[in-house]
Length: 69
Image (tube, rainbow, N blue to C red; front, top):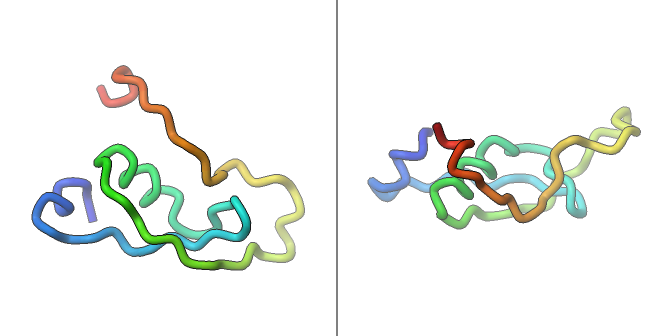
């Protein structure tokens, strides 16, 4: 789904979150923030083999106009 589909009434599928860590759907989360459209969050479980801190956290995303070029 691309951001344009939201304008037609489509919804992004929910993202899965373990605590404050996105375990599935970090691209959907970013797209929903860019489109300024809420996205549902459901519980998820981070894989046990992933012991490092993840690079994708559930945070407030701050967009810079230069990012959208």
